[in-house]
Image (cartoon, rainbow, N blue to C red):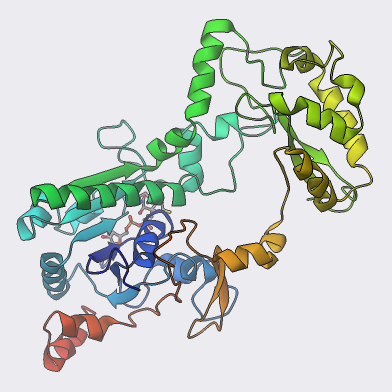
Length: 416
Ligand code: COA
């Protein structure tokens, strides 16, 4: 099966998570992604949080599948010449170095554009160009704090809290991938490349837009009726942390199921969808609530929503999270078990859909990784293991026209 991005050559000058997540996605869909890494060390994640001595860490392998690895010291004259050749033959260069690092290496946007006017140059930075923090180096949690996620996550009586989901890293990579694909379509129309820039702060803000919605509602009316603070608590002038409240118009909460005393994940998420009130009452064995004026409307329920959740927990007390969901799904109630990573790793549905895949690796044996969350009718992304450091250096240099002799000279100059 041919893949839509076949023929697109990408210089993957990325490291850690935000950039690699973007280029990995493009590699799954057929692009030839050449990961350029410093000789001897490579991407820092190869050695971070190692679980097997001397083998590439899962941090690296899970973000760099389907790529080729070229070691190149782009600070040497010889290395720069190789990179220039690669730039002339490539469609996209992706990087997420600290602000100014690519310029210091001698590869400004102007220089890259001069070398190859069709090249798309895609960058991740912590903050956007011109922002008063534009010079900052940024990691995941810094972006979550600067993007509004931390101030709105967690419980009202605790500190700002970061999410385990990589809102700053992988999420920014996904935004960048959309930008690159858009620029590729644009190049089809104009024949020219362009600069595509995504900041981690902006990408987090994009996912926090409902909280900006809430800030404006709060400014106007002084309260937010779907938050636990309403109607018994107090609101200040900023969007509060809402614990596990539903972010939209449907109240919801994480509720205890059988076994919660010993299992930290024996919970379900339960949503009270307005028009599903009748089936909820029937499922809970509370048909009298259907017409009770204290319960019949969403507005009437809100002042005692936590009493309602408590009643639901009583109903859940003798049911496992799976049993509960199996009953509730028959009533069309939006809910799900709280799944642990162990349960996700073993889930047969996720294995069957290719969302969780086991891939081979030359040093590690096989490992689990997350496959494409995007499913196509005409493409089944095949996930392959990540490359070893410099595994494809000679192959890529030969494709660029370097002879064995010239490759030997690059070795001697410590450029590869
Ligand atoms: N050959 C020679 N030099 C190389 C090289 C190569 N193949 N690859 C990288 N380098 C150099 C860079 O040019 C840079 O040199 P300089 O500082 O002398 O200009 C140096 O390696 C280090 O790059 P830097 O990006 O500063 O790494 P860092 O480890 O200090 O910082 C981050 C890491 C992630 C904080 C930083 O890269 C960053 O803020 N990136 C943008 C935001 C981002 O993507 N963050 C999320 C990561 S998940």
